[in-house]
Length: 244
Ligand SMILES: C[S@@+](CC[C@H](N)C(=O)[O-])C[C@H]1O[C@@H](n2cnc3c(N)ncnc32)[C@H](O)[C@@H]1O
Image (tube, rainbow, N blue to C red; front, side, top):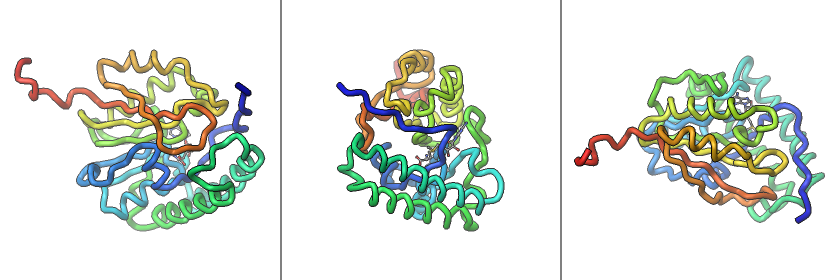
């Protein structure tokens, strides 16, 4: 099969996917999140946290991108839409457009998502919901979240962040997730659309603390396998099995 060109990227981009894209990547079921705490790690300028807050859910985001003046952060996210739209247009033939429709519609969806993020990020409600923090050190207490998601950072940037970083990052996500809670990560390929070869080893190292499964992702786009990692933190079922 013809090798697809890698997505050209220096450093880590701060993109702004929408709630609907997160719904598809992570199989979000709003009703199951009611009364629970949710975390978007490497949230960038995504509108996921804003949309969850609009639905009354106790949602937070963490990203080093949130440091400093909030208007400067929003301006940087706007520039990234220009940059990424130009890259996508140049490589449009490699992607599956069945969800987005076209590069133009993809851009329009990103602009709408950024507008929702910006409104919440600069609102009173948003003041304490966006933590300027990065993996593998999150400023949250142990066992805080029922769901922690990470879109387009872990594994995608494996060329810049190695195996040890990924292990420490997943351990930190497990620390802040409550027993029985879930971590969901998408995608599991690099910017060159290659699977991360140490994923199985990481899952084995985490086996004692988390049960893993790989789920087919419902967001057609990338020219590669499209699976979401679901890690369920162990320890929440103590006492249910009366034989133990
Ligand atoms: C491609 S964006 C993804 C944004 C959003 N999740 C989305 O899907 O549109 C990757 C994000 O990872 C953030 N990032 C970089 N280093 C990080 C770290 N050590 N921990 C958490 N996030 C990090 C970047 O600031 C950037 O906003």
